[in-house]
Image (cartoon, rainbow over all chains, first blue to last red; front, side, top):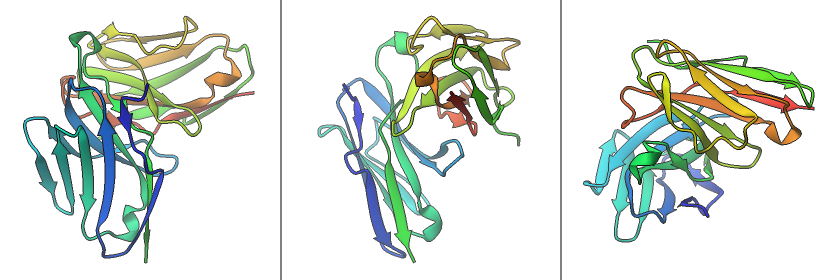
Length: 115
Length: 113
């Protein structure tokens, strides 16, 4: 059973416009959420995170929104740039103390920013 | 500063052979994690170290998989009697304390023929 879901495997956006990547989760014990970007043949690169006590976190062009009641988070990239083209993974941690802080990942969304 | 490094970057092996994958975490990070990404799949948690001990091994898929960490630093993931389904990219991550952001290495691509 997937606890973190990214329902859109791919997204194409025009350069300069907003990219919105979505993520849903089912485990109400998750209390920390992260977005990673991954280029081919590289490891995931940390982008931005948010804890469950907040509903928004902003870092430059990247903003993450968390809606706890809907168990939904989203990543907004404004303005989108061709260099943003990559696979974006949503991840969550929390839960029982026995599982420490392992991350549970979604399956990823391939973002393509068209020049 | 130096990030997480992993070696080898690529490993091709024959079914039934043993392999060792190495991870050098960011200096000073107490927590170390192993994940793997199979073709077309998301990242799957394997094992977590806090210092040299592994409080969470819940993700190891079988007893052919083992891992150790020494000196609170380098970790090796060993796969015995490799099978074709072990083919994947094996990723290592570290974090300063274990309850914060994890930083990933470039991964080791393992191909079992």
